[in-house]
Image (cartoon, rainbow over all chains, first blue to last red; front, side, top):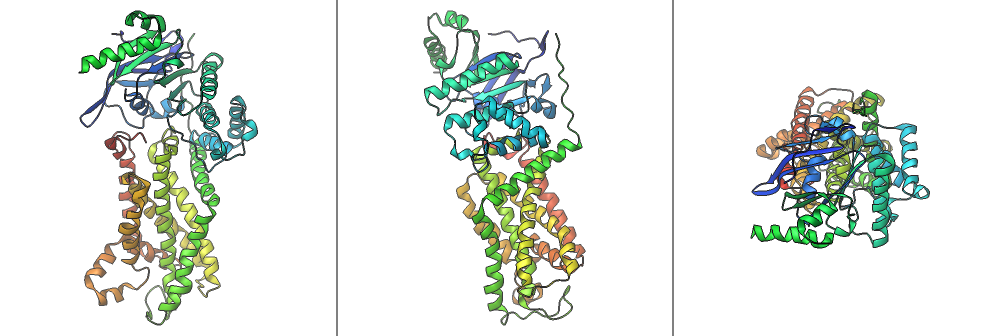
Length: 258
Length: 277
């Protein structure tokens, strides 16, 4: 069991702090006392099989639902009590595509800027800069429906970063991408952590997206089974590779459940 | 080292930018969908050119306010057709909300830091702007079909159109929160749009309906669409129908509150259904 983290670090509040969050859909308990932190400039992997509760956690962190227990803070702002302050600092890439196919890349980004109160020349400049960063500046006028899956993902990341958030949440962001596109997207996000000090929570069920020195939060059946880095995970599972460790821990949990 | 965590102040200019952005997207989507623009225009024009011409003899209209003399059936039915444009446009907005939810675009909207009620009203207002565009193009074409309200009527009808558009949009917005899939939209046509349109004063004067069927008359009187049509009818002739105005405003408030409730993350229907937006 991981001890509850402090409310903040010397460098200020965490990009994301989730403490004691539980959630039910009717009789189904989707999350059970989940706690985790994402410091600024850190890459944290939320690892869990399908149905672990990752998307529910994202829905709560993005205030698509309100959390009824525990607290979720983005850069120190409670998502439920101070949603305006919290959501200003949040960028999100959802599991399924959420771009408007009928609009161009630039129009999608300018629309997103407007949703954050940014308009006019600044919105256009931010959109151009974001598209340049993801290598799609020359496609700015194209309709989104003309993009490949990997390109659309890059636009979604550009959009999530457009309003310069401190915290970036990505839910299975490589779903449906080929190996090369997956590597490109993952590499780009890891780069952002280093260059822009963004705190990233990367939710995935794919163990090969995890590096040994990443902070790993293992979620299964709504519960956090493990929090720590790769070597600690290997040690806890008494194995020598992450895949085995993941299966081992999830398998133990399955056995317990049955 | 500590960091500045004070949120950016979102002042009136930021609200205006957000509002304009949401409305701009609605208009842009409409203009991109040429078929929708055409259909929105052709539908009332077919009613005006064919249906109204055919019924001119069958449905003579006596002198009733706001008309000061006998009017052609085409003139009488015009406010109803304007209401029809707004009704269909509102339902199109509802359809677009369901579509946005299914495709995930809705989540982009709901992730905005602005209050959710403001976002929904902005979305509604965007839909109303699209309907105004359609109504004025329709009125322009109808002018050449001898539908000639006083010039000032084109101006005085504007606030009525805004209010009626908001009411119909609010009803549609609420419906979008309870419709689960796009496929269910056919049911909306059968159970909402057609009854609302036909059980109203859009096509026939209420006194004629009372003569034909007292129960239907009461249904028509309770139908908010009837009052929207009457509000538009009077406003088109520079007059105010206070009862209709009050009823339209009341329905707008009730359905807007219901829609905001439905999209509220702590109380809403989305959560009850376990949908992440």
